[in-house]
Image (cartoon, rainbow, N blue to C red; front, side, top):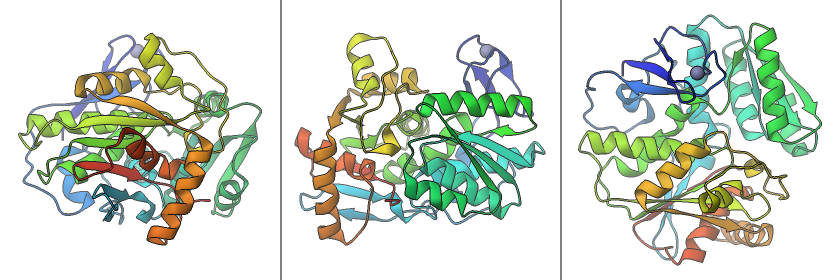
Amino acid sequence: MDYFLSCDACGEEYGREYPSQLCSCGGLLEVNQIGRVNFSGASAFWDYEPLLPKGRYRHYEVGSTKTVKSKEGACLKLETGNPTRSFKDRGSVIEIGKAIEYGFTEIACASTGNMAYSLAYYADIEGMKARIFMPRHANRDKLRDIREIGDARVTLVDGDFNTAQAAAARYAKRNRSFLAGDFCYRKEGQKTVAFELLENRVKRSHIIVPVGNATLISGVYKAMRELAQLGRLKGRPKIIGVEAAGCNPLSRAMASGRMSHMVPRTKADAIAVGYPTFWKQAIAGLKETGGRMVTASDREMEREQKAFYRTYGLVAELAGVASIVAAKKLGIDMPGTAAVISGGNV
Ligand SMILES: [Zn+2]
């Protein structure tokens, strides 16, 4: 789709030649569609290209992940089937494509692990450098995997994900590096999870997604709006977000209307984000669809992780099974519910 970018802080607008995902004021940019799109259905990830921001993308094998039915009939979307085992790959292929289009040879990003692994993987294929900023106490196994990839350099920062995010932004500004991460182009790629779950006009009652930086949940909401506009959304699915009990800033913001940073205390590192970047859009999506936030304790996720392995023979990380915990807690683990399972990096 043809598009322009707009800033959610100051309202400034940019054409698609603008080589950044942040406004000059530092605000978050959003992709806005211009005109109509020609879309007649999809059976694979790149069939959704008319619904993605125009760009020159390499058509890597990504997305189109399998689903399995839970005992109660819920649809479990196995994002662990992506090349680096998480839904992050959907966003990375778009971000990397944009970075190449704008002439960058290096990307910088902050991550708790999965996003960095995904970005470093695609950067390496393209012969680009990856500068990664991670919390010092990040998951050791994820760190090892990232360091094994070609030209990926990792800087560990003292602090949490948000500290790493500030360090990555500073680095990208000073060097000619494309700041990748939880921004608008990644959100565009990640919204395809919802396309795959909803576009074939299956009637869903709930879509459950894990929430860290709230990019996926706000991408799901954007996808739903776009499908509704195209007349391709059946019913009114509610969005359910799930956070770790020890790191639930969005749940708190839903109740109070204000976002304040909280120090993550959870072993579910993939969703250990104390101040989600896309919190405003996430709250809009939850409210507009009549959805809600749920929390999952580390113990509940550990129990579900084992059960998931026993039942399906598949390895998922703690955050990866959080949505199953949420489905059971809400009593909606049944047909009509779709839950995103992601992150096999344990
Ligand atoms: Zn701005």
